[in-house]
Length: 391
Image: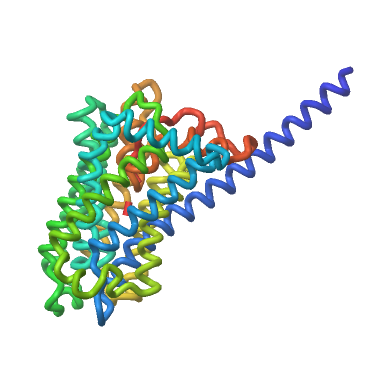
């Protein structure tokens, strides 16, 4: 009898060690995916926007990314319904049309996200990739401030200090860039550093507000993350087409919707469309510390690759500013000290540190049915907030 208990205990310990090892590997895979997605999107956009020759219309790329994202989410919903087309159609009609009030709530964040996606193209087209990556971390500051103002969330002292360091680091980088701008930016007639800086600042403000507003209106909602993305995508496509007509209508009528599209441009669009959905899956295995580390590491990767791809010059001032930003991002993702109320802080941290506000929150519940139970770490069971995931 005692021998049987010992054998059972040994088997449980072995199973626990095996699961722990599997979860550790999944965390490393999650880290790699987050770093690659964060860095590759910015670098690839910068690359295709600075190539000589015909330049594609950024407004058309935004619309195309929305179309692909909606189609993907519809396919996932169909998969959840066991490929029952009738049930899927009825579900979509009920969620989108009959519950039109919930659908209309998403018009505001969808407008902001569409604006944000277009501004990111403007910013990356006019700023060095490394400078954009560092400056774009201001979205952590804006999301935190909007969370405090709109959701009455509290931040720890460490997080307030990290936000000050973040602002200081970004300011130092801007001083460095004003003093010695990238040669390709200062020497090119179609790139304007000031326009890029204004675009990224507005993008950070819109990202922070949209993420917090999205969380506020969807608190307590039972809609799946895939259904939310379909609702957002419907408005996103409509608003994106409106922006396309307003900004590039005459040019697209002359040259065509897919003018300037190359294989690399399609890679950028697919990355933008599917990157957020992919992160929504892998983020299940990444806690806030790991996400903060991934963001920090992606800044380093973007900077190093910018040196080789774009001739970016890294000096002492940029290194100091970027170092402050990297440290601030990591500090902000640290959990609060024991004994404090961790719920507001951790929720705020989750909102600010992820990459895609439209896909992270609530993904855990919807993806569970696609994942084997033995792969689910314990932290998958608690998060149900709407977080922030981007380019």
